Image (cartoon, rainbow, N blue to C red; front, side):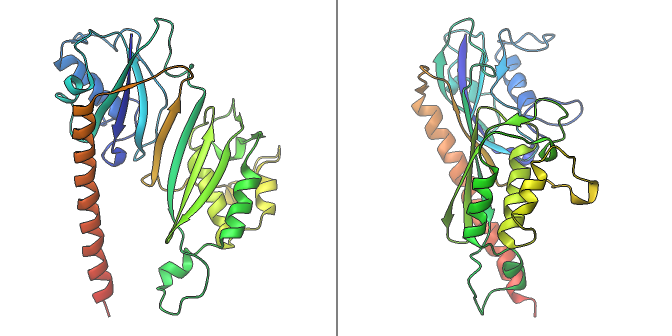
Length: 282
């Protein structure tokens, strides 16, 4: 049994978990394993297979973790040879036969990069920037109110197992608030809906009382529902397994860094182009 750390750019995929007729990260990994003849052509999934989480469409990951039975030669570098550039294995650990990537994870950490300029007056700010500006004190108060054990039935489409105990914290980085959400596990869309609610409080669109109402036992009517924040700024950044140490495959990690650095440059270039167009429209 082996556990692999997997990083991926989720913007081109319909989530992690495989689905019929659409491209997912899990399908991509299984295709690579078939090409390596680790997975038989007619097999549903690898022996011993499990994954740490099921990220939504558009969500990326630094430390998604999968387990499967595989030969010693199946290193991250070998797996990457059959994976597309957007999906990179970069570390590995031998694990006991009883190990389960989902159930043995004790903590998962997500990071959301929220565009939220400070609410302080800026005479040069564009209307879009003003509309999305956030009061940091209100945003931090929302994070505190949403942290701890609650029933989040109003913040997920799930209809059971909705009691969770997340910790939310945020740090300002220029025009962005970097929101970190940590919990043992998450209901579907919970992180993105937490972001939406905290943002609404931070912009002044709703008061802190909306959080109390959302966390109550009563279901919110449809017109008061909390929509999930966009998925692209969200990253699964850590999955913790006590006592388990991963060995970084330096060649695979170097390849992964190069891939994602290139993607960073491409997107920065795209932002500059869009900025020139926006600035040039009179």
